Length: 202
Image 1 (cartoon, one colour):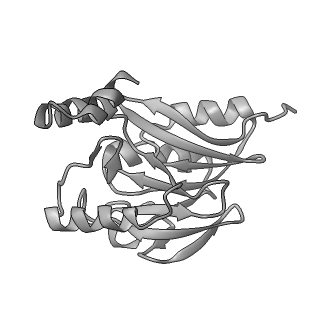
Image 2 (cartoon, one colour):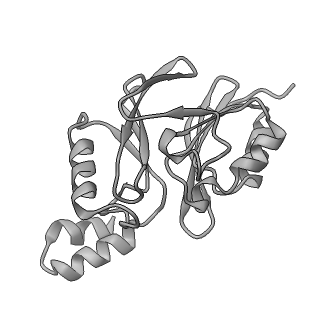
């Protein structure tokens, strides 16, 4: 029996710029927005883990593409996804809605709906960690917000305002690494901004 030394929340870079977030608690694993199944399977097998839950923030294929294969191997896994997306995430077995509180591995999470990127995008927020955490999907990134595919500018603005009301020390786990491109775009708009210039050098 291998001893699992992995703990906490780990980012798994896949595709061009996606990040699959893996939360390891003892011998259990929770996967957030698995774009692919193979890297997740490899991580599980390498670390001798049990897949407990899959969290889905929205229906885009680069966030749910690996889920069905994971279900085939672990048929009892909970797939927690927006209730409004039953048609577009048909393999969900644990539908949730805005402001619902759920338990995952004995930690409480609040579902926060963040419309804009899609019409039923959700996030997962918990205060039961050293710092509060938010799995935010494609609503917010370092240096920018998500593209508005189905929602409106007003909805995205309201979603970002909801995020801004969370505690200042909340750790935000976003679904892509867009930092450099976002900052370059911002610098093009504000070429004299010292904060943007400094951030690009970090």
